[in-house]
Amino acid sequence: MNRLLKTLLSIKHNQNICILTHRRADPDAVASSLLLKKFFRHIGYRNIYIIHPEGISGKTLSLMQRLHIKWKYQVELHDVNNTYFIVVDTGSPHLLGDYLRYLDNGKKVIWIDHHITGDKNENFVYFVYENASSTIEIIMDMIMPIFNINYFNEEEQRFIAAAIYIETRGLSIASHSAIYWFNYILKTTETSIRDIRNLITFEEDVSHYPALIKALVRAKWYVTSPNKNFIVVTHSSAYQNVISASLQRIGADLSIVYSYKNGLKIHVRCKDGPIEKIHKKFIEEAINEIKSRGFTPVYGGHSKLYNIEVIGGKFRKLYVEDIVIKALNLVTKKFGYTLGEIKN
Image (cartoon, rainbow, N blue to C red; front, side):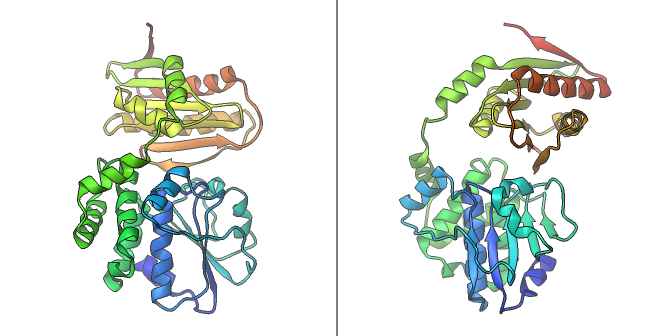
């Protein structure tokens, strides 16, 4: 962490700083950029810009409105040449969308995340902390020894706490650091965990329900033998993250949600335990299978959640399903398991 702080402090004060997040920024990405911007302001930097490609997500916007936080970010950056870029909470370069062009031509780039990035650029400086459960805690671990949380107003602090709560699925996958900073903010603002839950519950909607119901109907359940892991494969063009989490809650050890209409995307989520080795090997085999068919996938994620994507084009459902099932069969055979479909 000291190396990250030293790298950030090495940026010259006469340079612009641009903080880039993934497209449709979620609360973790926005809170991380907020923390960094305040920190740089505090130590004397003046020209600090934030860009959220394609804006911020609806949930993020609603949460900020609920807390009366006005959030300003750039749409375009005019002085690109004298700019140091800091990319946060972005598991793969393609998640920057069209803004990836800013990082071309040898620009100085620092990449901070808790995900495993896909293809790395040898010209970038990466700080990837896989033991962290959020990008927020990485930033707070770094800056708080020389920074005061009271530089943020109470609404901003509650937003950061809510972002930690959301990113760590209600603290269920939170690291010790995330829990420490979450409790630290609650104590500082005299906020209860119920207040945070109420903030988040207020933002929940049911817009994903139709897609979830369709995905559940389409789902194919498999079981590995002899170790009895349940693997679910389904498809949906939207809400893959919500669908995979829901499948996990109803018993899936490994959930695979793919889409094929607007490009190819395979979203993979697994539980803790022995299934993780199948998850990791499946990702490798799926990427190899896509490459063997002449496509160049982009990919990124972390140890329990991963996305593989071929941008653009239309694919047939059976074509993508064949990639998934072929990769699954290869993996299960390598581990000496058999894969059987559970029929209704």
